[in-house]
Image (cartoon, rainbow, N blue to C red; front, top):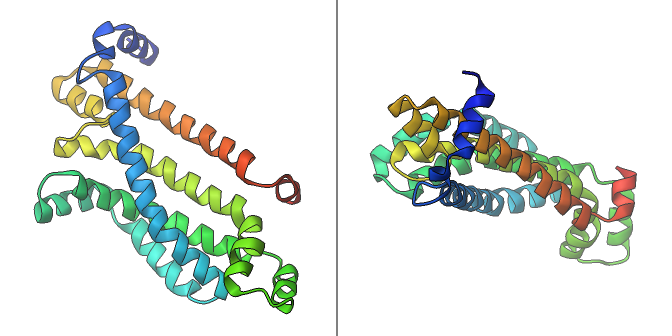
Amino acid sequence: MNVLHFVNAFFSDAAHWKGYDGIPTRLAEHVQYSLMALGLAAVIGLPVGLLTGHYGRGGNALALIATAGRALPSFGLLVLMVILLGFGKIPVMIPLVVLAVPPILITTYEAMRSVDPSPVDAARGMGMAESRVLFQVELPVALPLILSGLRSAAIQIVSTATIAAYVSLGGLGRYIVDGLYQHDYEKVVGGAALVAVMALATLAVFWAVARLAVSPGVRRGG
């Protein structure tokens, strides 16, 4: 049997579309975990990246933090958090947030530093407050690159949120973990296919957000 046969068998089985273990339920759980982790990572990474990029300080420290965050194994961190905190969503959120903060932090910093200094200096010369310079002059220009960092973080979260199933939570990883335990490779392949589709859907969402949020002039300039 090939992969396409497993995919077809999984999605054509009506039992996989209803109940607590149905695709809609597991998909909703996966989306919930992903949005929570991305939101927490954005709350941490965006303000720090914006402020350090705006003032041009702390770049080396951010690079060190990002390198350390990327070096931590998500599954190993999950196991450690479960040992320390027990089962639940918090031990799952911690490794996902640690995974997502570095691309948001570094990309936001680099986006702010890449803004042409001429309009920034002109805005300051006109007496604009630093907060207005940040949000009205720099941020609109830096937005495309900032969104790319959020997109990268979101895709990593979507792909890694399957670890929630290892600590008895739901999500699409439930199919992969349960399928391996049951030697049900139809379920394993189906779960992996759903994660891949969700990652592609995430790309599409961020493409649409960029089209709506980034001004045409900035897009053409990029």
